[in-house]
Image 1 (tube, rainbow, N blue to C red):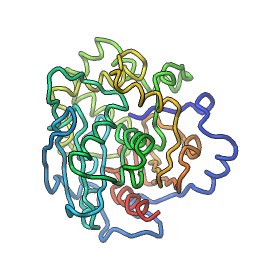
Image 2: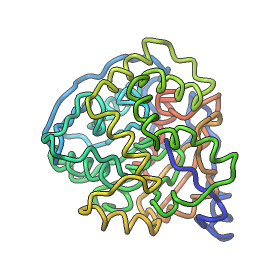
Image 3: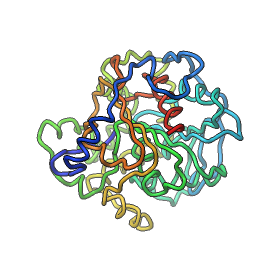
Image 4: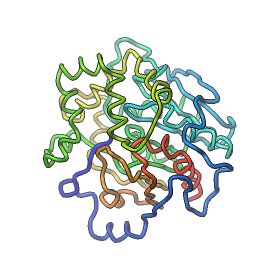
Amino acid sequence: MPDEINHGRRELLGAAALTLAAGQFATVGSAHARSGGTKPDTIVKPGAHTSFHSLKQIEAGVLNVGYAEDGPAGGPAVLLLHGWPYDIHTYVDVAPVLASAGYRVIVPYLRGYGTTRFLSDATPRNGQQSVIAADIIALMDALKIETATVAGCDWGARTANILAALWPERCKSLVSVSGYLIGSQQVGSMPLPPKAELQWWYQYYFATERGRAGYGKYTQDFARLIWQLASPRWRFDEATFQRSAASFDNPDHVDVVIHNYRWRLGLAESEPQFDGYEQRLAQAPAITVPTITLEGDANGAPHPEPAAYAGKFSGKYQHRLITGGIGHNLPQEAPEAFAQAVLDVDKF
């Protein structure tokens, strides 16, 4: 789940950026996104779809990546990136909307999820932030996608941020739930006020061997609890949960998740070949590509306030608050609003 940004110590923007941000925020209903852009052909109800048009596999970098694909092969590409503890079904209602609008939609399982597998047993089961972004660049190369609109939630939003920051030439535009989520081990080492630390209870649990064993033994129970805490007003049914929970049976899932959260606290090693990326990310680089950020009005997960990150987006930018009890898994809870953001940012 995304890193919380502490306003005082992370210094994301000054007074000028706050003034700019005030004119950029919009409130959007969960059923219809107000904008001047293209509208979806039909109203998209959450849960309308239970599967994807096509599931495929391809070797890309150190992985054999499982991914869903929809839409015309020659259409402009959109990459939809999921987070933890979720999977590609975060976008099961979003993908057909974008496909019907003519986009080639790619929804990959991240390393450690679903049918994505490491090609070698010797490859570290690394979950650090730049590695996951490098996986997506390798996937784009394998699929011969030169540029794409990149959109994400949770880990997927952070990964989309990193793609836009480090490889802006590969990102036509960006949609990011909860805004700017790029972090660093240095930032992760700095203490937060007790109330904020309490929200990260699972991160500290994962820092222990008891936590690793507990997550491995109770993976589904853990994921269900996070879903409930992060989206307190989302009334998902058991079938919806099980479709995503199946992806946690991946043999590398626990290792990747544990490494991700331990790495953030400086308790797990980086891979040296990614040190250059992490050094650049530690500078909190601005994102220059056109961007829409989204936030649900009932997000129960740790997340920064929009004013804290507006100044990090130096290109054309808009923030939207999605109302109606929308929680952390925004694309699955409010698919029409998310799809609308993708359609609109492509017109910026």
